[in-house]
Amino acid sequence: MKVEDIQQEIIQFKPHVIHFSGHGKEGALAFSNSEENVNWVDIEALRGLFEIIATHVECVVLNACYSETQAEIISEYIDYVIGMEIKIGDIAAENFSTGFYTALFNGDDYLTAYEHGKQAIRLAGMDEQVDIPKLKKRRQTFVPNFKHDVFISFADAEKQWAEELTDYLRKQLRQKLETADGFQLYTGNDLQQLEQSASLLVIASPAYCEQYQNRFAELEKAAKQRPVFLVETDMCNPRPEFLRGFTPHKFWLYDEAAGMMQKITGDSYFAKANELVLAITHQLKELKSQQQHEKAVEEQRQQQQNARDINSDIDALVFLHSSPEDLSLTAEILPLLKENGIDYMLPLPRSETIKAEEICQDIENNIRKCDAVLIIYRESSPVWIRDQLISCRTLQRERKTPLKIIAVHKAKQDDLSCSLKNFQIYDCPPDDVKKYFPHFVEALKK
Image 1 (cartoon, rainbow, N blue to C red):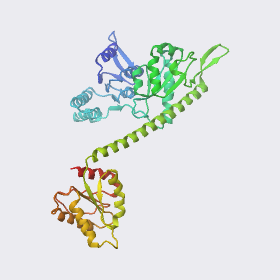
Image 2 (cartoon, rainbow, N blue to C red):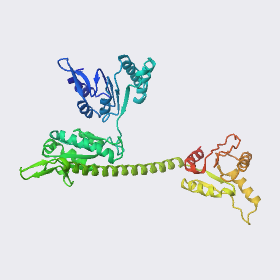
Image 3 (cartoon, one colour):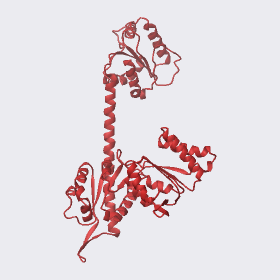
């Protein structure tokens, strides 16, 4: 394909997968130009292309020699990119493509399809080339639920300066955020990407005001919804309305001798850049902490909602049965019954006014009349629990309706050596009672 046709094809078809099959070398891919000569497209050109089309492309396959470096760069914007570590033979490349797309067209995800592609090389007897294809996955963001951590907006006239600053920010933020690759910076003029960005960094200058004056309304809306970092490379007077109120990081000074503004350089530049790094680091950590808190609150709300859904319309009376040695365990479980709105009965306590035979009679009555029996133990022996199970089975014959459940709550893996027809027995250590309890509640509804 001619290099001038690439962008037109992508714009027209908006593909989810882009496959390049051809020649490559370190840092470039080979295309033909209008004179049918080889045109080597370098990494920066590829970066710019895939930055623009990242909204709809999901996977890129570079089936060309020495394309791993290009794949690494493209993976800054695309979720899945496959490149070749070194030179790969034509037959191996063809087998990889066959295995990859056969799996993909049959419904497998990109990771599985990648493994099928490698397996196709192996099945062809070319084990030495199996590991040449390398899969690169797009780096995750530091702040959850966003595609970019920082959207960096600048004028075309400031591109070189902005890219140099971005490179410095990327290196320093990786250290300050203590993450190898868990953050994303976006540099481009696609304002649609702002919706998927946690924060906005504007590199303001007279050139920026001129280029974006017709898009200030979009930028103002975005600035109200996320943190904004303001960088000035020159005096902006008047400053755009949506940037008023923000303290700028000024990378300029007024040269009185020359009577003009000049960009700062040297140590002054790095001092300002480091101030910006600290500001971004602090803000991203705050945003991440807020996201984590909101997630925890939502999970708790969802758990409560699930509990309400599970427990709705439960009309059951539970007999909570334990030996005297395990009354403390009973006390731990009672709050769960109350939280879930489940009616319960407890055995009569031992006392001077209540005879032992009366306690036994009460236990039998509860087994006959309650809807479920929750038998729990931690200190008592398996002999005691087996005796209670036998009693439940015997008294089952005198009930008008069957017991819904017998739940054995235990602390150690004792072998009870029994099997009871029509009964459900759950084994659960006391420390896991909250995980176990929803299963018991669900059984009550059956």
